[in-house]
Length: 142
Image (cartoon, helix red, strand yellow):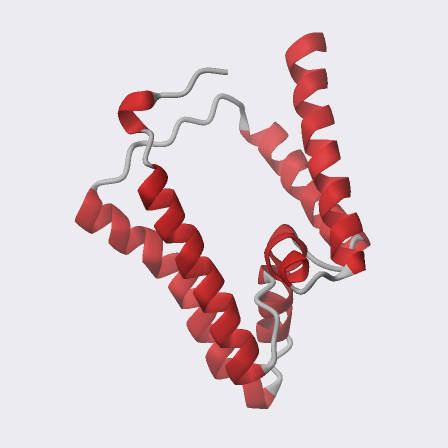
């Protein structure tokens, strides 16, 4: 692995992580809710009348923030070196894993670990291991 030192931005990453931490803390303290993306979307799609507004604002923010960053900062172009069929299969597998694990990486990895949830610790260790394993298999056997 090579680090692209010209585009290495640890302070930007630290700032982004701090903002994510602040956002999940504010959501937990003000609404008593976990900022897991799958749970937020699920609640929005099933339209629980009393909490649609914060869920909609959350999703709009997830979409608007990178668009705003792109317009103001000029983000680098993303390159995906695979075709649509593999991306669709990968997305379906992630969705299956999310349902199997009762939550997504943001819910378990960010929110659950910060609350020292044993279930989130197991889930995060599982998806991290499978990610490492998948990269190893793809790089060494394909």
